[in-house]
Image (cartoon, rainbow, N blue to C red; front, side, top):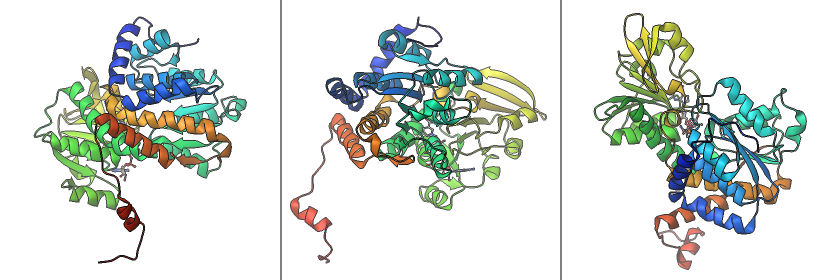
Length: 420
Ligand code: NAI
């Protein structure tokens, strides 16, 4: 088995943490047990490009239990947990190509290494693997043998829909991100908690009384804004969509343009999936000591080259925090090099929320195994039945029971005749 990881020596620590995460992933675990008996993924070769975390390790184990041959590379150079990578290689015999802190060249070399498997399925987070497979540098025969793929995040789904619209997408994709049991919970509660977790671990900041600007009031932004408020922050939201801005206003947040917001901000967090949300004119207006972080998928939300250009000096302030000194002596602090701060400076989402995201991944692969001949080369939603199953299993795991419709209610809800 091929692999490229930091060291195999950390396998013991990795296994311990993977087992701990598994305690909070009962839905995925029940799927793994069923997969072991039914082997629905027999014969599939899966190349995965995901954050190499404890939760991903449990997903990889599930795919293997289902009969798939799987390899994994990192979907971000800073998110790899080297102990997890070690355990996957040593304890699970799964090929991993990921080293925390790898440079861009190694990052793409690792994506290419997963293609040596000659995958029939891709599992992506951000669409770097799919776009690499479609690029001119990659042997065109490889993309031809892929039957379908899945995509984990909002930014990846946007890129893949754009490929499909241009007619260049060469195989179908299931948008796992768009399952309600994924983005209602992972993007909102997962990102909401883990983004603050990353910033707190990196800076030891007291959130209470702090003025925090949240850029983007989508699923992730809403989560961060509400969690920050819960910890006592004074939260300002910035948006470009009227509806989302209005929602933020009615949720009780102050909303204003970024240029105004940065003047008050102690901490600014971007979660938009957009480019250069924080740029030169914003850095120039920031207070001395302002902290900047990003939790959107790519490190383009903060215009770091512009920040470098404005700075006369740069140095490490603490692990995961770089200080940029501007000409007038003000210092701005960038967390996690502007990469997903929850994964760069903390452990990513808690396992309990990834349980649902990765249950959707595993069940979507089973669905692909059964149905792939029927798809066109476009982006598909996760079937509703999968979403429903994941929600039911998660409720069961929480020990929560709900009511069922009576026959009378079912009839009423499907009729129009009865009024007052
Ligand atoms: P979304 O589409 O629900 O929300 C994005 C919001 O940003 C929209 O309301 C949009 O109007 C707003 N926006 C766009 N440009 C803006 C600008 N210049 N200024 C202010 N607001 C702007 O997307 P979602 O699901 O919230 O995802 C956001 C990003 O976070 C994506 O890149 C996604 O891939 C990533 N993500 C990160 C996770 C993490 O672990 N850190 C987890 C899940 C998603």
